[in-house]
Length: 249
Length: 277
Image (cartoon, rainbow over all chains, first blue to last red; front, side):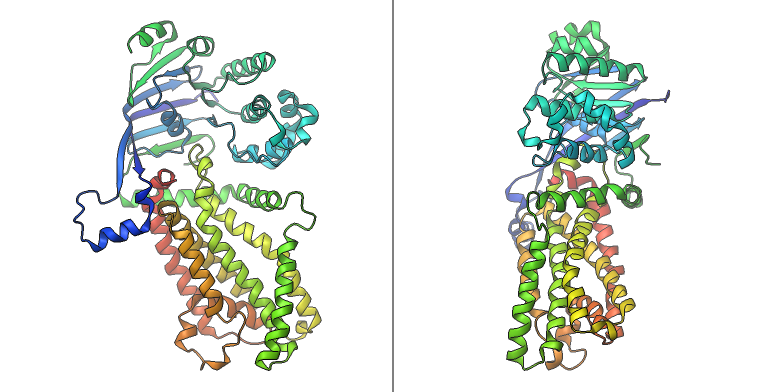
């Protein structure tokens, strides 16, 4: 695929926060019976604007680093790019097969074996049963878990789990890889393998969006960087100007 | 429009657009039906991991209930065991499908919250997962049905086709009820408790363990109970009787209206469901 792209236009994403109380039916019924005297809050939700009027254009070969404080909207942006969150305004268009590595435990069943989890996660990632079986050996080898693949996942360490998840997620012929901060998991050997695999992905004309607090990591993987602050995005800058963005805080 | 290669997400563009997006969700879930099946199968396997009999444990407990109630109630009501046992067996097994699908329907989205909040998987996939999981369970419990059919010689009188028709109508109806319950439960955490109480009440109000002979035909007490129609359209033909045509009609109307309602609710709430969780 040569026309891999991410195009985000004027994206605004509001997050309704339904208080624990608002989830109780009684409260809502009570509201009906008192005839709206409780005022304007008809939906019972407080809205938080997680992203506001965000524009972003990425093309093949772009490796964007996202920086920003906790709660600045990095993860929300990644989730929106993965298609989980619907924009309230604006639009998101992603061309290319997306692989989101946002949560290592996604679709992981701790009591199932490594092999079963590879199958399950592969299915969730959009692979067919046949594709998974075809790639099983490669995934197994890359994960480096060997005989542990026949063991239940709950016996794995966090690093082993990371290896498996990373192996499956990147086994998908992904054009767009979304990652949230976790690449530092795993030992030195695995870091090296993961590094090579990521570079390989980018060479296949893919796009990487990586959110991280680690400046060194961003310099290693990214060629562009964007800063989010309270849901407002800075310009996309060259990675060499990372210090400027960090200093702008 | 929606493929693995291209994803487009936009803000609200009017009601019609929301309906087309909901329809797209449904179509995508159909294209990825293998995933729903894998998830359902995995659910069953993982729930009974390490157990030798697995879902057959439920079958055994159902079988015991059938045996106990079949013998006891036949005596109490003064009905022959040959008549009552198959009746109760089918009642318990098929009501189990209904109660299971609807009760588990409540947890459908809540359970899938981590997947829904970071992937673009269609929401319908998770509804099919719940329905398929219950059908897999039913396939295990079918052992009981087959046993009574053989043991009491019902294969000589039963009429499979209308029973399958009834089963199909029932599943179509259960699916929308499960989906409505799933959406409502995601927003209001009281719903699962409420639904469970209703289903517990329904098992006694529906002729599962008792025969509706005491009521005149088409008595409102039965006609107004949707579970009665679901049960009778499956059970009566298997017992060699004819189910009232009205029941099929009511189920068909319920399916159309129910899906229209559920689909509308889904179209309107679809964007928000992930935030409910």
